[in-house]
Image (tube, rainbow, N blue to C red; front, side):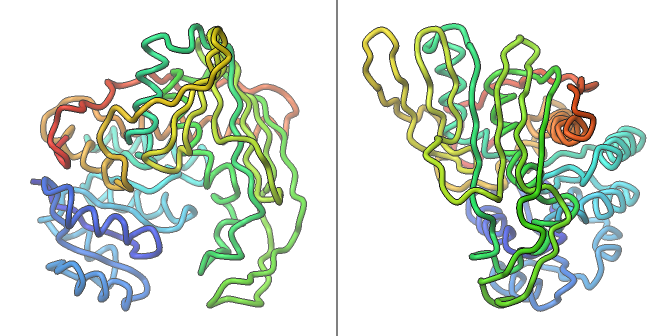
Length: 365
């Protein structure tokens, strides 16, 4: 049993609270904290959280807390994670690890210096959908991997999100917001990334919010919102990735992996489940494959449970900074490449950890 203190009780916190309470009983939520106290009070009451703190510093000073769960906005991840590490706490952060590469490098170095673990989201790759696709690829269903194409394209979040401004600021944008899901899925399917090439632009300098409670307000866009990139993996395979908040509609599927025997259609990496189909190049038929692993429902907190078990046992974790930093470096390098108009090589190296074990009881890592 490891004790968790949650900093940030916004939109994403709901599913973490639910799963901490109902699924992952090897974790215990002992404290919550939010700048808007009413949010923390609501969570405390609904989930019987023992402690509520007015400031994150007070929460970090609690000797009972082992891991800080950082659910703040992307541009706040660095500040909160750094303060938690300095206070001697392990950290699990929502994505991304930092708003830029320098922040990620400092956090990784600080965790190493303090003998602490810092890891983070996304953990959707640990779900039934991506794990089943990994198994199918590893077993040779699609033959030798030839390449791939990924698309995450929409017309933004301001029509539905209650607080959309941060999506268009530093640390936001479609690549840093949604890219972690796609890149994390890809490296767990195909291995580490060697280099990237990127292009970006911003189609709209302002955005009109049409969702309550900020309906009618104008957002100033301060980050690129249409990014096209090419990822070269250690294997030599090249996969293209489009992330955009400037596209009204597309028929492109989430992730397609092309092999010498056919094409695998990978489900949405923002989800834990999804339909898996394979176009068989020999039979010219489309085949559907059942999910072969646990965690088909929204299981956010799965990565936190995995990291906590790793801290307890000393076994490798699937969600430590080895992965989250590699993803951050890939995204930062895409943006750097777009500015330089040249390819950028990554300095970090990534090797996949073991796949999930489908024989374990639900909620146990």
